[in-house]
Amino acid sequence: MSEDPGPIGSGSRASDVLVFGTAAAAVAAWALPSPGSDVAVAVLAVALITWPLGFFVFLARRWARIGDWRFVGMTALLTVTAVLATSVGIQLSG
Amino acid sequence: VEQIAMLTPLLVLGLAIVVSFLGSVGGLGGAVLLVPALVLLGWSPIEAAPLGMAMVAANSLAAVPRQLRHSIANHRIGVTLETAASVGAVAGALLALVFTPRVLLFVLGGAAMLSALAGGTRTGQRNLPVEGVAFTDVRDQPGRLASAYIDQTGRVVPYAPRRVGAGLMLFGVAGVVAGMTGSSGGYIKTPVMSEVMHVPVKVAAATTVFMVGVTAAVSLAVYASQGRLTSAIAPAVVGGMVGGRLGAAAQPRLPAPLVRQVLSIVLAVIGLIVVVTA
Figure 1 (cartoon, one colour):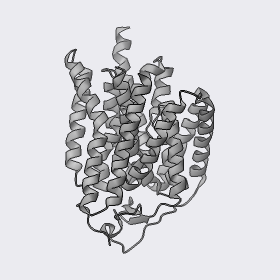
Figure 2 (cartoon, rainbow over the protein chains, first blue to last red):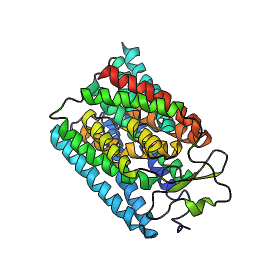
Figure 3 (spheres, helix red, strand yellow):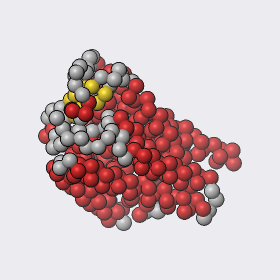
Figure 4 (cartoon, rainbow over the protein chains, first blue to last red):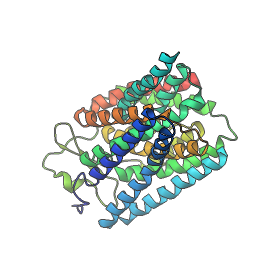
């Protein structure tokens, strides 16, 4: 029997808030005139680009609580490779 | 002209909802469907690509709360395989400087159509429900990729991925393709998990939706550094979220063979698009 990693659905309320906030920023970016839409686009971009990092932290903490260090390490490795892929992409496009 | 300008965001919204719904059910990013559709409507590929990735990221983000509530996506599989895909994406970005992706696209278009054939003609289910097993006993096993999900009849379906090494290698290839073509590679990831690793198609689809969000975030960071993220992405984001939520809500209620059939049809269309546009 596996150890309980927390109730099913834990973290879903926080992610609901993030989804709602991102949707609100998208609607604002669509509906508002500049410069309001520029600010909304910036918020939207930050949300869409950084949410996986927040989710990695959530997963790593969840797995650390049950001592699943193999996947904590795997999450750290994925974070490093994702950041590396981003920087290589930016360097090449520059 | 003014009416057309007003209609364009609504058209993008409608397309993004449909594509994201299919993507969420079948486990695809959907940029490979949205971007060619926008190009056919007169957008340049340079303008259309950020909309495709913004829709994929929004679809992925919108699916997270429901995935956490229903425990369908296997995040251990996702994190493991996406690491290989990320390494492949770096290699693909570098290879794109040297090679043209045309030949690769032909191969991948063919592979997508073969996957469609394999998934569409396969009957029955590999992972069957098991009676008398508590979900909390078999899901989320520390240190292991094996897990379980609850099917549309409320029964527990345990599973254990096979051929993980081959899966890692093929995800590396999917990453190379994503890096070379600027797509999320979801149309390779779900069939690899489902047909090569024998992960249940619903789990594979939900896990891919999580993984393409990571790929899309990387691409969006690059587009942001180029100043290519404008308010034009907003309808694609709203459509991605609405379609993603609807698809994620529908998927747990659908029988696995139906999901596989939907995926096969979409894969056949994608294979055709990739070959024709290569």
